[in-house]
Amino acid sequence: MESVDLTKIRHSAAHALAAAVLRLFPDTKLDIGPATQTGFYYDFDSNHKFSQEDLERIEREMRSIIADGQKFVRTVVSRYEAMALMRSKNQEYKLERLADIQEGEEISLYANGEFIDLCRGPHVDSTDKIGAIKLLGVAGAYYRGDEKNKQLQRIFGTAFETKNDLDGYLSMLEEAKKRDHRKLGKELKLFSIDDAVGAGMVLWLPRGAIVRKELQNFILEELEKQGYQQVFTPHIAKLGLFRTSGHFPYYKESQFAPLPDKISLEKSVGDGQSSKGLFDALESGEEDGFLLKPMNCPAHVRIYMSEPRSYRELPVKIAEFGTVYRWEQSGELTGMTRVRSFTQDDAHIFCTREQLRSEIDGCLHLVKVIFRTLGMEKFRVRIGLRCKNSDKYIGNDESWTTAEDVLRSAARGLGVPFEENEGEAAFYGPKIDFVVADVIGREWQLGTVQVDYNLPERFDISYVGSDNCNHRPIMIHRAPFGSLERFVGLLIEHFGGDFPTWLAPEQVRIIALNDNLLPSAYAAKDMLVGRHIRTSIDSHSDKLNAKIRRAEVERVPHMFIIGQREANEGTVSVRSRIDKSFEGTLKLEDAIARLEKSIATRELPNP
Image (cartoon, rainbow, N blue to C red; front, side, top):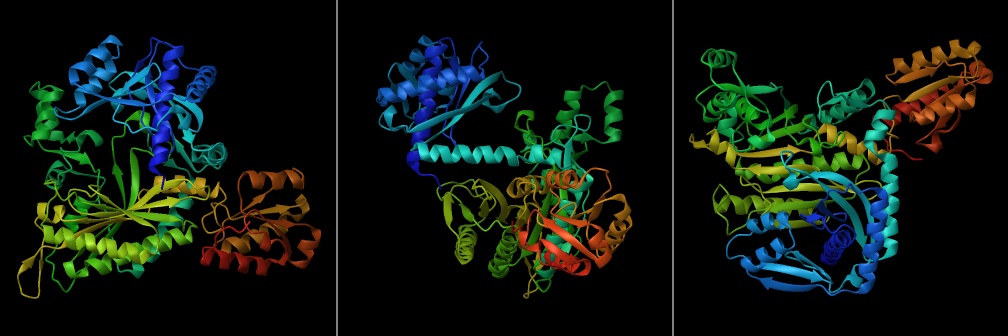
């Protein structure tokens, strides 16, 4: 976890960036410049379009400011003084940001050299304490993140305490570029995003669909061990369902627009009603309609409610690979990791209070199995707790205390680092999030386990207890992968496209040294395919080295090469990208048995 000092360094570097930009481009207007988890940025409104050459000039100017050792001086001012200063500097965005500060809240300015900014801080003492910096690029960014607003220019970079730390990070970025799932996904024909289909809508190509199917089969095996029941629910449901759950209209900004039913639409057109009037009627409930589901949980609640429940049946565990739809802004869409349609490995557990701990333990065990199998054993846990002085949470104090204590105890049992974040709980219950480090050290927020007191109340669900009275179950939301799209995007980068044998879309490429040996190649393929091993033959007329190179570029994990000697002796010469111990000349049957073991045990690459 990054230290506060690194946050100070990066926030201070953002101020040095803004100061440098104003020196070189004095008419620039400033918005905000925060520190981030990996660096810093500042958003600018300028008639000049910043180029790579400009970034080099700006970075040189930043280094000059850093070398000057300018003190960061904090001044508390009145709202009137802050407004007067920003007006004098013609900084209209700062005036708008100033208006966001509530009455009675302290307003502070930070100055370094000739530069002064509206800012809460904190900062390092002086610019020469900023350390090593690097500007990384420029991109468009809508003001306040709203695509209806003007697009500003975001210059972003990173800063570290030492040059060695910076160099290590830059090396990681170079490696990340090679592993970029958008690049590899296209090269390996795993997925496509087609404008004719829609931005943020992933098309799983046949090879990518294999990876997805293998992951689903893997988790289904684990779910069956824990007593989950698989279900399927529609992609669309009546608006009333999401009104009851609270998803509509309260989260409408992140949902697709509601759809009127055909009768309401025809009536609206016949009556000359405006589209705004129709949507207002849908939102208010005057008209009926449907919604592309943003969540699977309301339908799972209705499945729970489809029959009377007794305490003897609990826990009820419902699982689904359910596709949901969220309206992400176009500027935030990124390959498979930020999309508008995605499939969750979703499950919901309905249990008694006494069963809560064991069910949480089961959820965490599942997460550990998944991470271990995929070589992601470096992870930490964040526990989201309520803010005790807030009244935004539902449920009674006793229930919250019990759930929070259960999550703490379960997290300790994982034996990994964990932190508690007060105020990070959902309004309906505490949660555990998992932050995983990939093979090159980047952290990804993945699965989550959430305790929910809200939906059982909103849907008035119950079970009959041993006292023959109705009781309210506790609901647990659990999604270890989170989203299959995002998870596969992460795996592409984690493995650099070199999937373990069990996940690889093509597990073996057979290469015959000449066309006369193709009958032996096809006989070998028949044996492999008959044993459910995904296999192809390279029947091109190229030379051996070209065929080997093609298999390597396409990230095929294993090559079986057949020459005349191999054909005569019933052997294959094995070359492997991911397991050098597998290489050599083997009997075909022995090579197949080795592959079967690797697939059955879901072995990780061993290059």
